[in-house]
Length: 345
Ligand SMILES: Nc1nc2c(ncn2[C@@H]2O[C@H](COP(=O)(O)OP(=O)(O)OP(=O)(O)O)[C@@H](O)[C@H]2O)c(=O)[nH]1
Ligand SMILES: [Mg+2]
Image (cartoon, rainbow, N blue to C red; front, side, top):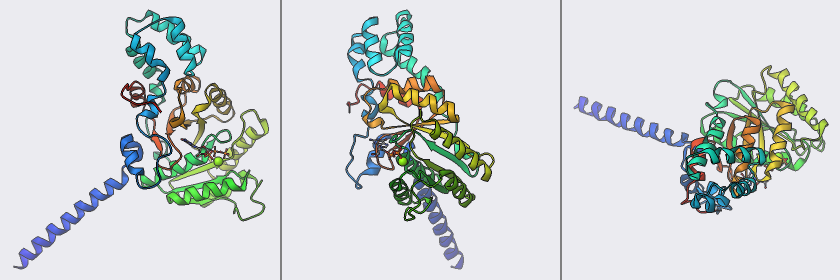
């Protein structure tokens, strides 16, 4: 009898263990690993989607190409117009057109392959934060690019991978910026450090000093994300300020920042390419986060950007909410561009 009870107990413990394991695995599933359909589902019940979240995110990017693609035309003038108007830039557009003229392939097949070739190396081979602890990333970019929004998304993403996350608010330019970041970061459950926004001197405080204190405080975290204030790439003193932040971070951790990610508003077209170049020259950008893809109607920018900067594209922002972030996967990205079933945004 005792043996029977003991047997039942063992079976019950094993079943509970299995159930726990499965629950844990489910909670670690990343939003980026979900199909975009699942992303929609995951957001159901919170607030109604402000933007369409499906393959239509990409479907519209080559909208202007569809007429020519279906007619199979290789007409140079017609393609020139279409490629330029989708923000490919004249250099890349001309290269593609002269290749198309020589190719035996139909335009749809030709572009699917060529665009993949252009962007295939943009996919980073591994998660940047896996090899170092703490991994420190500076998030930089022009005003309004989507830095703060992306940091909240990134913090959520890392937490879902069971990483501990500390976010340092070094955008001391505006009090409201600290409050916006703090709200978002605490909202997704990460830790936050900045100069107290209730402190009257928070506005205009030295961002490097905040970074020094923040990195010291979060030394034990797996990952530390640093928000910086938006700056025009043409403002020399502000670009120098970024270099100082880097030097000060190195006083706390000699290897920091391990990454410097540039956030780019992808709706800016050609402008985003020149921005990218200037930030890269000043600070050595190691990754790109492209935002506002949900509102983008011309996809050429992305190809041009990677051609110019040769910097991995880490994430894509596809909306304002914390879950609206996708890991960049080059094959999926290009295939979805040509998904004719996709509706346009
Ligand atoms: N549709 C859409 N909106 C976005 C996305 N990312 C950011 N935004 C919006 O863009 C605006 C600016 O975003 P912020 O994150 O405040 O930009 P920032 O770069 O931190 O701005 P500054 O701190 O002022 O330089 C906000 O209204 C965001 O909601 C995105 O992927 N899609
Ligand atoms: Mg900001």
